[in-house]
Structures are given as C-alpha cells and as structure tokens.
Image (cartoon, rainbow, N blue to C red; front, side, top):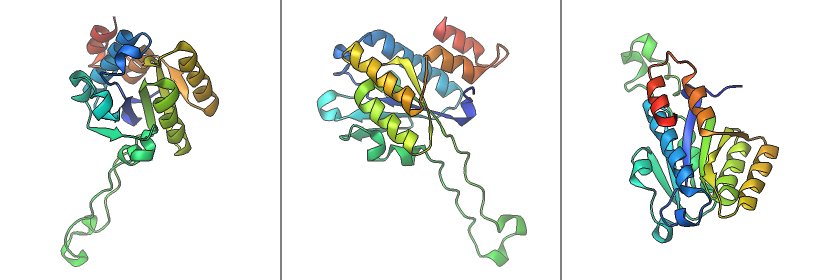
Length: 201
C-alpha cells in the first residue's frame, strides 16, 4: 500500500530548539523534517506541530513552525492526550441556513463532511517518548501511522531503535523522508516533481 498525498497529514512532534543539541544526528533529522514540510505545503497536505513544555524547551524553529496550521503546546507526552486527535479529524460541515421550506431542494440535505485524511505521517523527538506515545494513541484511534525514521531522533541509538521495534510491532509503517516524498508525488510528470528533486537530490 502506497501513501496518497490527498489522504495524508504530517505531524511534526517536538522539533524544539533546546532539545536539538541532545538529539542523535540532529542536523540531518531537522533537515529531513524541513524537506517534508516544504513538500507537504506544496501538495496541500495539512501540517500540524507539537511542542513539549515550550516554556522550558523552546519553540519549533520558524521554518517548521511557520508551515504548521496549528502548533499544540503540551505537557502530556502523547499529543493525542492533549487534543491532537480532534485536530486530525475533518471539520464538520455547516448545515445550510434558513428553514427547509425557504431553501431549494438540493440545499435541504446537510452537506457531506470534508474528506477524511486517515494517513498520519509522523516525524519528531524523542522517538521513544513523545513520538512513540503519540503514534500508539493514533493507532488505537484507527489512524494509519507512518513514522519517518530519518526525521526522528532520541538521545541514544538504543532508545530510538527500541521505539521503531515497538512501533512496527504495533502496526506503524517505518519509512524514510524520500519514501514519503516519492509516494506523495508518484510520477516524474507531477507538477511538484522538480520541487521534490530540489529538496532531496
């Protein structure tokens, strides 16, 4: 099964300034997250961010934060516990105004809800804490979860890899940033293929 950009949402978990110095391969991880965010924005894939205790750990860098529709400040390790799951649901359609007799027949039915986007692409820190707990809760809420392994980090390799083992066992798909990008775009004829090339090649 390939990812579809029209069914995807990107969640950037805790890419915060004061966490970065302690993370493994931080520069490469942050760069891959920025590449994904740039492509997601071009493809109109919704982007959401989280910040763990931002008064202590700082905010996301502007190049990531500025691409997010919303950024969730949280104290719980799982962002789902603080309301992320509600953000990922489609907005309910507004019923037409006026009484039934004053409206044309085609407007008397409530409109269909916005398209569901059940594919959640996750990148972030720390892989074995906030990212993993968020991912497990999203799986429990019946989202499809794709974890971008080269856009995630922890303080130690053992913790990061243990998170990947547990997530794979729970049903998350483990992918790389390039895998996501090429699956979203699908073809060298796609209008954003040159953007993809400039970001990843």
